[in-house]
Length: 270
Image (tube, rainbow, N blue to C red; front, top):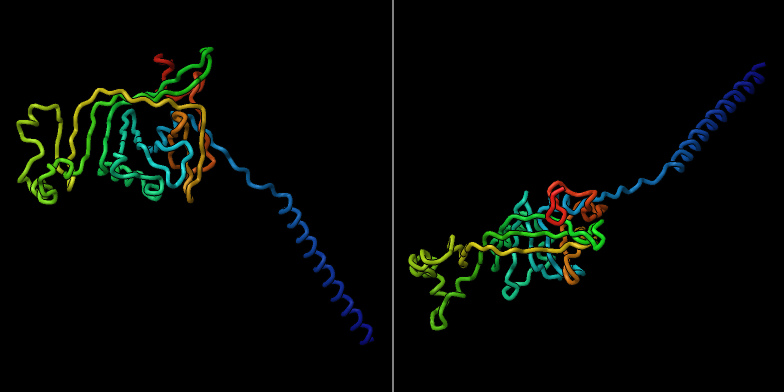
């Protein structure tokens, strides 16, 4: 009897083990089936109107139509509200490339160009839709700036006569011993402001020049190192690009049916 009981007991243990193992296998199969049926995460593409992009991204670079790390930055455009600041470096003195700027913040880029030799223009801007020949849809956008001031930054050595010791002249100007412009010259000129900043002369004059960019329906997306740039063609040889941390963002031109709040249609606000 004792032997028979032991056999029954062993049989029950084996049976329970088989059942539990089976349950585990079924659960594992269900999990694998569930995982295999899960769908890959969809990439959401975001589309921005050009007018919204100009409001969203503060700093834009005008550079060659095929931008890369060594592409020269022709000018930097900074937009805020309805004011635009355009920095145009003196390319004869220093060639600034995309690689020079790629790891800088927007504020650091602005500070760099504030100090660089060249020109700074400030004015109010507007963005308008130019219609196609049928008058139905957008042919291009036109960014127009009514420039009110021009500031030029020049190295002090540019004002030294050939027969002067340049280093001594620069030190004399910085100390105030010598002046680039006398008080009488400033009083009889249209110079709004003149100051010495380090080794540079900074002069601001009024201007009434109009500056415009034609923005075409030709978009570009380029990753240089680990930074993504998006932008638009502003002619056959140059583009206007800005950095983005949203690489799946695309741009569209404003249209008569879908446009930004401040965008006008050929001079007519609708």
